[in-house]
Image (cartoon, rainbow, N blue to C red):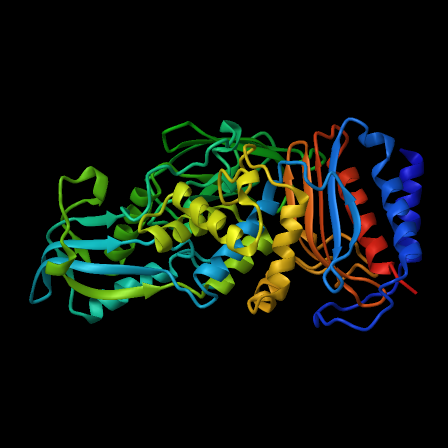
Amino acid sequence: MRNFKQLFLLSFVLLQATVSAQNFQTPAFNKFNSSRIAEFWQQIDDIFNDPNFNSANWGVVVKSLETGEYLYKRNEDKLMVPASNLKLFTTSAGLLLLGKNYRYKTNLYMNGNLEGSILKGDLIIQGSGDPTISGRFHEEDPYKVYNDWADTLLSRGIEEITGNLIGDDKLFDENGLGEGWSWDYETYWYSASTSAISFNDNCVDIIIKPTEAGKQASLSILPETKYVTIINKVVTVPKDTPTDIDVYRERGTNIITVFGKISENSEEFKTYSTVNNPTQFSLIVLKDILKKKGIVIRGYATDIDEENVSLDYSKMKKIFTHYSVPLSEIVRVINKNSQNFYAEQLLKTIGLAKYGFGSIENGVKAVKNLLREMGINSEDMIMADGSGLSRLDLVTPRQIVDLLNYMYKNETFSVFYQTLPVAGIDGSLARRMLRSKAENNVRAKTGYLGGVRSLCGFVHTADNEPVAFSIIVNNYIVPATLADNLQDLVCLRLANFSRK
């Protein structure tokens, strides 16, 4: 272990120059220097033969995007759990099948007649899976979209609704969680349920502030809603005690317990909890916003599944349509931030666009058909979800690099490339490979589950040769940072590799 750490630190000390990979161009270089490749291969073998990973399985492919040569391979055709590297398949398919300018549409309809300022009937929200109705694209104001809707309704003369606020989420299936997801994850933001109608990433924000040592901490939630019940078990502790807070939502309910301790001199602590029935959650918050804006709804805010009603949109009047940001910006969130909820929404959206119904099955079918068209054998892989949170997902390193190779040659590459985290700069790679030739050079998707660490993407060598790589490790039992270190060290070797 000590020798490995010394080797890793020495590599960072020696590699001080920073290169830019903003312009992914191919130079002229000597592609026939096989001795340099053999030397590089041996160096990488030595890295992966680290005894700390004797019980683990490494799957690796490094391929020149100019010559098509494999600079390194190890278990390249072994199926491995990819974790969030599966998002590369989902986001690539989204850009190729839907287009970078695709926008989600949420329609608002009147199911009734407008008499003066009174809608005699129901207000219908027809969702199509838009994951962006939150503060993420609206200066951190989660209410911005709903406030805009209220203003539009008022501008159309609607001040009272005698019926219900009904959410039509029928374009997506009701299976909100992925197959093979751990029950342990269900409370946390990265396991948020999918829905054709969503709000605030289908989570509540929980803000905890210290009070006096020995007393209950102060707690608030955003959005402010009675849809969830919060049980506050957080205690303020002396300033020399570290903060340690966790949350738990009872399965099938919206009863959320927040427990732990917050240091007396701590800044506010922010965490999140998923909600049960996101459609209902979205509608109740919307109804509250409309009320604050002066629009009275006499009936209930309700999921269409709770109503014995058949909707015929041909007989209704559309009030307006809300459009999301372009898909290119959504994919950027998925890949830069490794946002699972967005990825799951996108996979179902692909299924909806191709087969008329948003389900994991339809999304996977569309993605696999696309992979076959790319020349990638999609039969020898398992795609159980869109985010990689499932432990049932299985792909090979070669399949991932083949996907990256295809995207590199495709006209959408510049958009796709810009969505990936940049080493030492942003996203999930912001703190990795700092002060080295890999910084601002490597663009890659990270992946993490217990016992799984993956890193797949692009890098330029010292000759400015473009390279695609996939590095996956399964079944390790050492600290995850050691797996990260090995992956980073390989990227450093690649950034410094020269055929000269």
